[in-house]
Image 1 (cartoon, rainbow, N blue to C red):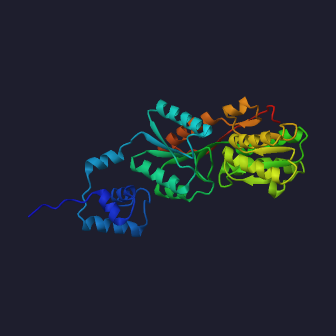
Image 2 (cartoon, rainbow, N blue to C red; image 1 turned 90 degrees about the horizontal axis):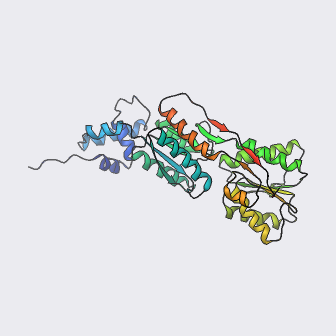
Image 3 (cartoon, helix red, strand yellow; image 1 turned 45 degrees about the horizontal axis):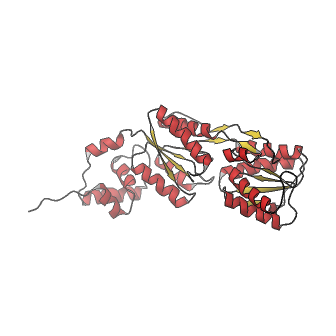
Length: 333
């Protein structure tokens, strides 16, 4: 008679149609003393099938899983984006100083990739996660919090989860005050992705400050889309199609502003004579083309996000942080 081969955790998870990390956490916490990794019904299914298939926990592997890996996973929308790349550099630099190692992955701002990349990092024993791609209303983050997974956010907020960001609202207000002080009275807004806090907060600060000066924007002149040059190109073309350009255009991201500037240049629109143009973040390219912008402390945001993550791992009671922006006035306004 042959000996029976024990089922592996991976095979057990596949048969249940569940993530291996979920099955592992439930089986390693039979009393449910830690966090709620799964519903009671799912837990029951896991334990029943494990018993039926003769699953035996590997104590050596379990000890590896419970030990700290000193690995932090970082997920960003696009690493080719200068802002996110610089934030990641700050996080990685701080991680090295504290004896940690980081792994970065791109989600391309897609919800399915946002989730899949995070789960793969957790499967590889990441101690915690830093998200640079969170949406303002992000159900996956609530799920992670419910499961007890340690994570922090950088670049974008998603209350009540802990984050390190620029004070984007204050930055938007700075732009409006500068443009009004320079005599501008009509405006266009290239607002980015309205589901991201960077778009919501920068736009809200800009519009609120204008309202305090008695200025409101026509809805047609508030253009949403993305944060890259193609999004800025499309928005600028729409503004031109509406008729005479407004006195000034605020793009909530430098790359979108650069896309808009390309359209204006091709159409013979002069900045700042025909219209002023302002961006946000102060990327190196902004300085080379004379773009007025708001400087966001991107490297420091990354460093502080990693430090916040370590505080969370240490069980400290920490709060979100917002770092101050700075208006950099150049020839475009």
